[in-house]
Length: 463
Ligand SMILES: *Cc1c(COP(=O)(O)O)cnc(C)c1O
Image (cartoon, rainbow, N blue to C red; front, side, top):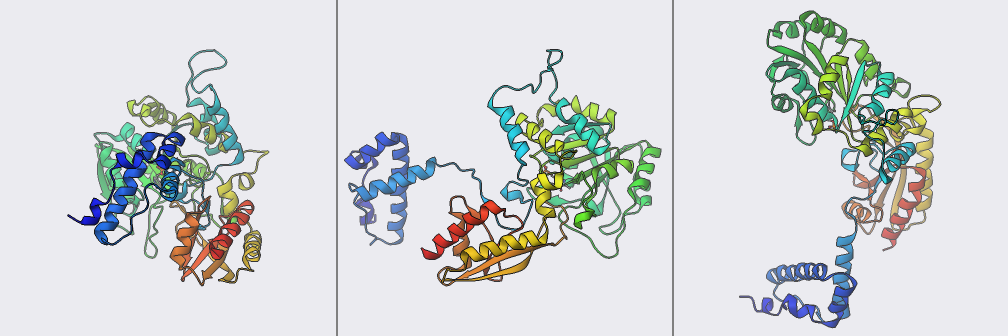
């Protein structure tokens, strides 16, 4: 056995030292024990790698303050607000859509005390949580009925279970997608208890392919937004209207997983290709699913909208209880949906849409401001340059959004080290690296965050 290892003290011994005893009073004994165990384990590893490492003075104040810092660290929250300087507006790893002020107020209101979540204020009897947003969704989409669940993945699973368990689902080979987090449409179909009947090819699927596939086992024709990829070139897919007519003639349901799903026409902002939910329903699709926290700009939720009979079956399905939306999300969703009607302007009041529609001049102005605040740092080479931002979360994967960035290169730190230091800032700042430079894309950074970034970069550059 390594001799140096024998010099490591027992936890009990360290606990008896007065500096450490004080810590046990300031924090708690279990926290101190766990921090000591970690520190000694760490030293054991260091010794095994190099038997000459110097051991700390376990009785001294320096060691105690290291232990204290470790406990403080363990006590600090794990889930934190961060600054998204990546230029990806709906960043799944950074929590997707930031909520509108009104949505934050609503979720606070619904959570600080009791709420009428499932209580009918008129009759004084038990109510349904589904009533709070159904009429709003119908108004905004033209759907006959709607229901909200935990997320869009749950919406698709539940939708298929209700309509197609034990029967077959016809889907185009060009739309059998995998999106992040192991969501693969073919697997979801299988999990719903339905049988997948693939039609067409990767690039071309015709109406006649769907037509030939329909038999007495068919329950659903399923369309899906291809989200994070795009097939270009020699491609075709039948028009929705024709598919809807076919579904109706043959007595099957036409369902569409829209993924993001937008409630307003984004073509004034150069994003006309993202399908608007009301247009999809108008084209004759029986039921659609879309996320609450993608382009809609609200909380995590899965919205299902369409024919009354289908929605009624969904509401009473046993799985509904397992995938139901929680009251915080419901409150935030209702408040977000209300911003889509006058006197509100969703493009001004919903952060996701505001970032998307933000004029390039104002993005540039923010970049210039950050550039100015950093301009006196000698160790940095700094540029304010045009850049490309993204919508993210599978919406408009091909779409380049014009943006402006401040990019820096440091004499002292590599780009990776700089990004790592930015992530340790309070609040953490998430930037991206491009051509060996650290880039702050200002399309996703708001005015208030500029000073925070400037202070962090200054501290790191001077440190
Ligand atoms: C994002 C997405 C989903 C999953 O939505 P969640 O709300 O994250 O569950 C499902 N289908 C498509 C096409 C998507 O883009």
